[in-house]
Length: 68
Image (cartoon, rainbow, N blue to C red; front, side, top):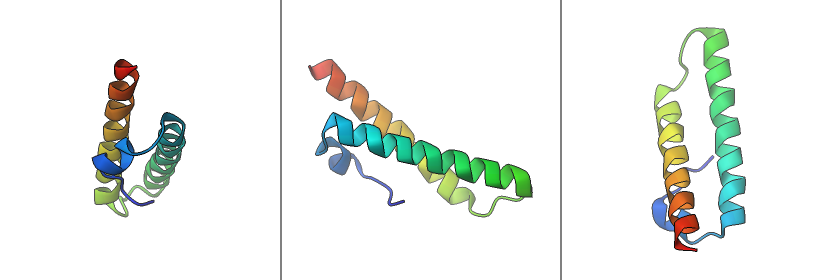
């Protein structure tokens, strides 16, 4: 999954943003469960970046809903 930047997210429609958010959450949960089962973090930087991207997407969704 490519990490999304704020300007890329803002250019999308709400429906597209929701789909990306679902994909990000699925990938995040997959990485967390895989790491919990193995006991060793394969790539901790990726998990951190996924969390930041999810937070960024949620923030932009909140901004867009408040505008309307």
